[in-house]
Image (cartoon, rainbow, N blue to C red):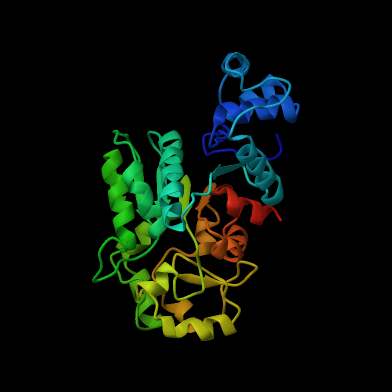
Amino acid sequence: MANDKVDKAGGHVPLVSSDINVKTAWLYYVEGLTQEQIAEKLGVNRVKVMRTLAACQAEGIVVTTINAQTTKQIALERELERRWGLDTAIVVPTPSGDEHLEKAIGHAIATYLGETMRDGTTLAIGGGATLHASLAFLVRRQLRGSAVVALVGSLPHSQWINPSIVAAKVADVYGIDSYQLPAPVVVHAPALRDLLWAQPELKDVRERASRADIALLTVGEISPGATVFRYGIVPPSLIPSLAAKGAVANMLSYFVDAEGRLVEHEVNERIMAIGLDIVATVPNVVLAAGGMHKVTAMRAALKAVNAKVLITDSRTAAALCD
């Protein structure tokens, strides 16, 4: 298929979903794909597709229409995939309370990593509340020849919000090495950032990030409530000047405009994080975020890094399809 993603081994990145059985039925009965085409998209053999379709009929999921609570989610997933040129969209139900949103998306992130992390996979990962929420749901197992690379520097004083914590804990879950950027997220001068990037150890981390198989990151809006400002990673006093430059989103502590371009603001020259241009070259860029307050930021993020996978909630998904 034209929109299928080819991984580094020459195969296709499997299509995943919040409910893969219902998505299989949707592709077959609604979109009219053949069993062979579906098998190729899912990365399975045709027999597996046949058994799934038969099970959907036996369980009453498929009658003359697709009959399941997740049908609306699957419709949103397919619309997001078409609208934004994604390989995969994963949509979870929007929880009744906003305080549960990060946990709901975090669970979907953990499920996605459980399905895609394999021996030899290198995962480049950011930080933030949404990604941190996934840690509670990761299933511990041992991988071989894999690694996790942190995309963002560290905070000298913090608790869970430290971006480097996410990379370290994911690596611990899978029993693999992690590579960190042992420098502050925000340094005092662009010249200092240049000196740090000149260090062989940090050059190595950046090179490893550029060779990653998967890049997983989230996005924040430009408001005092955004994680990057709420926890003082970047001073909230910069919000007016950033907004004046057109900033609508922050990714890996970089600030971008509505088209996903870095804004011309001095703080962008002091960020110790892997460049968004490098992240955009990773074969499988995964954006995980949700909430109506993030819709504008998410639109910018999808453009900034050419995301191929989106993990979000149903209400946000509907807004992104509008």
